[in-house]
Length: 295
Length: 196
Image (cartoon, rainbow over all chains, first blue to last red; front, side, top):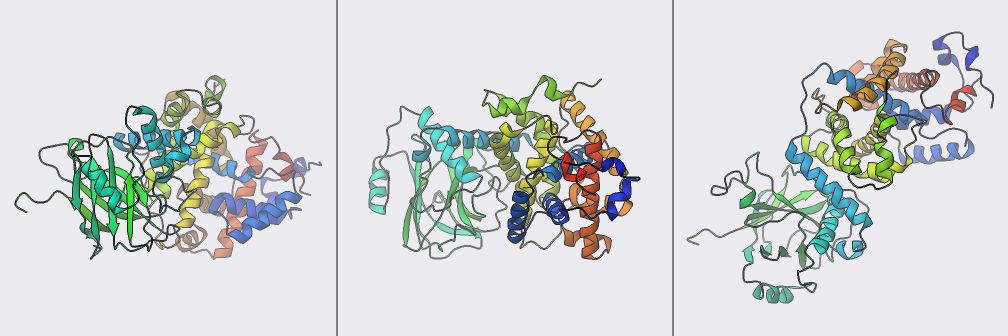
């Protein structure tokens, strides 16, 4: 390989250069700075194959170093706004859960979140919930293994054998409420198991969006005696993502990464595939909560 | 002589070997950097948090590929972070609004890490200052503020093609200057040395 860099009389000389693989470096630059469309990605792969002497991430690491420099300079001049400790803890748990799911021999078992769940390969909560289930299998080994609940009849039997379980009907939600949805959510604080029976919720395309369950736990409230689900400092527990098909009725097991002892509100949101860490609650089609005392 | 972190604590190597506690240490040490980059790229705090989770999982998966002869740990982390953030931004195509510029920053990193970052940042800053002003402007908007081609054109008033030209030439030149300072020597040298 011949190097002519020493021949450059000035730093700006390259502006006039016609590199032998100009297109290659342009694509590498575009990818590092902005990302590429599929067609350009294919072209880049082709060029890299025929230019094996070029390291494919040589532009990415230059941009990365520049990003570090910008970040360092900014840190020195502005006030810091750290990630909240709650969010940091949540992310830490999720990362560990994902790692557990990748390395656990129970991965396949834990990955069966829902018979209807068709998404795979998405980063985030789907794997996280699966991992949480894997951890639960390991940590709560004393717990009897419950047969899979696949329909409403089986779920009724399950409820009957879990007298501590709450069982609350679905109601139209808070944002973009779904009318006509029936079914219920049931959850046993003692066994930390639960299921959703849902009828009539609009089927989703898991490539575009998924439903995600959230559970508010009174014991996680700043003021447990006066729960305030919409307050900024209240963080519901992620109950996992799930899909609804057009078969009419679905039964979805709830897999929790954290213990929930006093649930008081369940809400389903619509999120991007894989779910989110914290919902913007842009669409909350259904909720379930304890009936009013005089109901 | 500055002692960089990777000489004493090659945390990514330990993550790559799945050593106990290594992932926590990685998240503790690079959480601020990742959070800061994510916060600049993502329109909401919630999305930034989601991105951070995704990025650290990706780092766990890719840590074994870290090669200290190419770049420092912070650069490797930033590279993985940026790739993920770009992917996420491109998936967010239905959002027409430019990414909000938020000058907020993460929690301060440890002093050891800051030594490493300062060293890497110093080399990059020197190289950056040698670029043409319009190249600096475009690259700053792209790298620091996560702006797209189109957003940069709208912000600066430059034609789209000019933005692309400045971005490409600026980055290629930046890469050359970094390489001349010993950055990323492995395999990448020929990329520019072959030009004639």
